[in-house]
Amino acid sequence: MFHHSAGIWLSEAIFGTTITLSTGRIIPTRWVGEQHVREDLGFIPSFTDWVKTIRPEPWMGRAEKIEALVDPHLAPPVLEVR
Image (cartoon, rainbow, N blue to C red; front, side):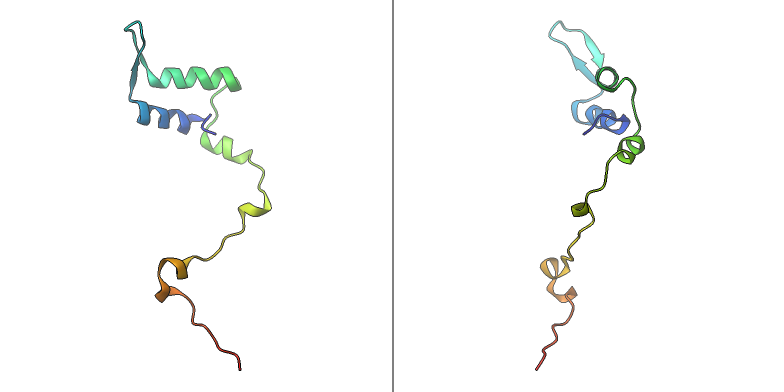
């Protein structure tokens, strides 16, 4: 899910700019992420490249309005039918 340039940036943000190996050697986190993605995909796609390949499913476009759950004052008025 994070095999793109933004995912590599995220790993750096989470783990820090460098990683210390058990041998004591310090290596850049970005290098590890770039090597990993290159090994898996052969290149490093951008986030846009990654998202463009996602095939939309019907459930992805169904959204429910949650205003009433968040703030009852924003809910549309209830009309009584007699």
